[in-house]
Image 1 (cartoon, rainbow, N blue to C red):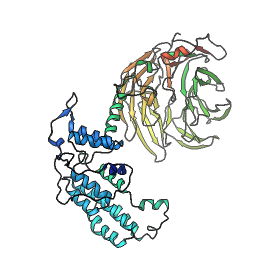
Image 2 (cartoon, helix red, strand yellow):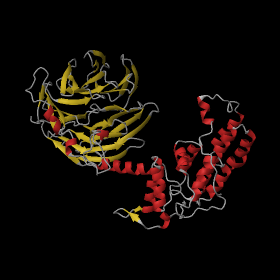
Image 3 (spheres, helix red, strand yellow):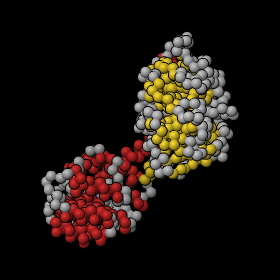
Image 4 (cartoon, rainbow, N blue to C red):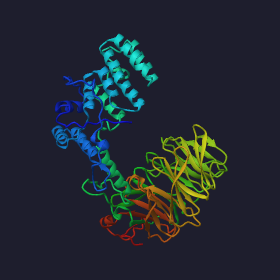
Length: 583
C-alpha cells in the first residue's frame, strides 16, 4: 500500500485556508473556488519515505512523521496559524498537493473529479480504492436524491456504484431509496434519517479512516499515541490502585507500595468459631461472613470502620457460603448440606427457606436480574428456583460436587460449578451446551471476575490458575507462593480494575499478587490460624477483608489511613477491635 507526500515548499503548495480548516472541523460544507486542476497531478513521495533524519534518543522517531503529526494536532486543537507556521518553517507539509485538492473536491461535491484524484494517490491496494470510491459515489447518489434528480441518481447507482461490487446489500438498500415515496418528504421518521445525505465533512472523516495514514493522518493521532504511552506506564505500574492518582505528561508514572491495603485497620471478633467465607456487597456498603458457628453476620461499612448490623442464626449446621442479590437488598446463606435461607438485609428478617426433601444444599447464587436463585445439591445436581420457592428447572447428573462453588455469569446464560475433581462445568442453560475447564490437579474453589470473562481456580497443588472463559477456555496465568495442604482456601480478584489477585493461606498469611505480572507483592501477617477466604471491596480498592480459623475477620487498608482510625479496646457487644496492625 503506497502513500503520498509532497516535496514542494509549504509556501508554494496548495493548502486549505484557515477558515476552511475551521469549517471542516465543525463539519460544514466549503464552497470556494478551486485553484488549479487535479487532472495532471500525480502523488509524489514525501520526505519521510526516504528520509533518514530522526528525533529522540532511541532513533526510532522519523522527523517528518513527527512534525506532520504535531501539525495535525495543532489544526485539530484550533491553532490554525500555528499549524500553518509549523508547515512553513519546517518545510514539511501536512498533506500533499494532490490530497489537498482531493479534500477540496470532496467538500465542494465534485464527485467525479475526486474519484479521478483518488486514483492518482498511487495506492496499490485495489480494495481500498474501490471502497473509497464507493463512499464517494454513495454520497453523490444520496445528494442527487435530495435534489430530486431521481434519474441521475439511478444512473449513478447502475453505472458507477454497482460495477464496483463492493457491498451488494448496501446497493440493494440504496436502490430501495429510489422507489421510496417518503425519501423526498420534508418530514422524515427516525428510521429514514439514514437516508439523508451525510455531511461532506463527515464523508471526509470516513475516507480518512479508510485511506492509509501516510496519505491522510488519522484524526487524534498524537492524542492516541500519548494516551497509549500513559496507559502502558499505568499497566506496567505494579502498585497502581487508585483513581485519584493523577498521571502527568511531565514525568513517568510510578505508584508506591502504599497504594496496596497492607495494614490491619480493624479486627472483627463476633464469630465464635472458624470463619469460612466472606463477601462484600456489590456496592461495597456491606460485608457478609459465614462461620462454623452456624451463623452469618452482615457488617455495615462506614468511613471509620465496620459495624455489626445483623447476626443471622437460624441454621442448624455450619454455613459454607453467602451470596448477595444483584441490588444488595437481600442475602442468601447456605448451610453445609442443609438449606438455603433468603434474608432481608435491612431488617435481618428471613424471607424464605429453600429445601428439597432428602437432599442438602451445598452452594447458592442469584440470577443477574434477581428473579431466581440457583443451588447446588448433594446429589450432584443444580436447581433453579423462583423466589417463592417454586422449582423451575433442575440439571441432573454430574453437575456439581458435594463441596462446591457456584457462579452465574453477568448475562445470566452460564452456570459455573465444579462438576468433577479436576473439571469445572460451564453450562449454557439456554443453548444446553456444556464446556469444560480441565485441570491436572484437584480443584478446591474458584472465583468469577466482575466482567464474567475470567475465572480464578484454586488447586490442590498450591497453585492458582487464571482462565479466560470467553469462547474456548484458555489458561492465562499461574500464581504461586501461598500454602494449602488440608483446607479449602479461596482467592479473589480485587483492586482498581481488578488488577490484583488476593488469596488466603494455611500459613496464616494473606497473599497478594499483581494480576498482570504474576509477581507476589505482599504477604500480610496478623492472623493466628489458616486464612480461609478473602474479599476485596469492589467500591473501594483500598479495602480488603480476610476470614480465618482464628475466628476473626481482619479489615486491611492503607498504611496512611491507620492514623485516622482511633485505637480502641475490644467492644464485646459487637466484637470489633480497632488496631494499628497488631494482633
